[in-house]
Length: 254
Image (cartoon, rainbow, N blue to C red; front, side, top):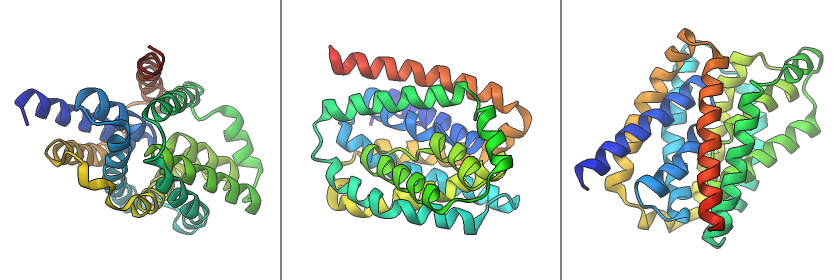
């Protein structure tokens, strides 16, 4: 691995980790395009590698939030359980999807994530979280949808998990961010198990430095969130995601 490629892997991993640790979202959305456009992975390799990175970084960030007592283990486990089978099923078929389709789908998801972040977790979601309690059918539906997204595209889906945990399970924002990491870990592990030997072709020399700095960034991200207003962080990452979505869409169409 060349020195410039190593530097790119380290820098990209740090950004992914900071995002995941600070916001509980956005990290894996940046991982796949970084692996494709900076480190030369194919879309199929990138989505599988992303699951490995998402698992490592989410576990690190989860430990930091757990130490602060912010993880709602019971509620998160129920939500995550609904996504395990969809994550495994989507993971099993993901490698058969044409690269252009994967790239286009990922661009759409990145744009959706940017829209959610620009709205800032949404005032409507906060209002509903104050009014509503947990609803079993909505919990199952939201958990299943998130699991399928994780399995197919290799994204943690925190940008959907955080508002879903707020609206469906009525969690306050800090608990939703922390608990989303538990959901992400469960779905990523289920998707990885279904992908089986697809990890054989991964470029480990590029992946390991990326994952290492991402894990360190995730640990530090929680402290970053305490110093910088969440709205500012969300707008910055939303702008980055919109740029990523535009690049990937252009790559698909041109």
